[in-house]
Length: 164
Image 1 (cartoon, rainbow, N blue to C red):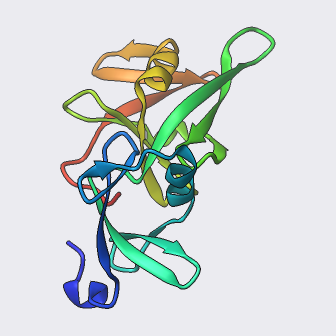
Image 2 (cartoon, helix red, strand yellow; image 1 turned 180 degrees about the vertical axis):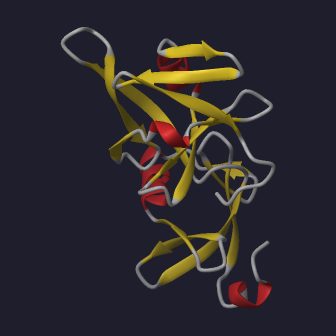
């Protein structure tokens, strides 16, 4: 829970980031795609764990429904034998990075997550990237794993509460 004392100097303008990675303002969706992207690109985690939009000197705290980032696309790159060698991710802030398969988690609601931005933040998979990645998932004795670079990485059960 964020320290209310630390947030006292940051205004709350009624901005919420929903579980699908879409911003809302005072109960209404932000309809402009460019504004959505600007907000996503200026999302910052504060020292107390809360998230805020920071645009130059202006800051406002946001209500975070789930993970601060959403995986919008995956690109599975295969080796010469056709086996998956790397998974590229495109995030809701339009950045791209490689998946760290050791960070994959699945919730009791079957929502897939991973860690992004050098492991500092949690990202929720959109449906299409989830399905694309599922093509490379194998069943294990207890659960599932992602086969990548000749290794199988267990998809762990998401913890009860983890920092976003």
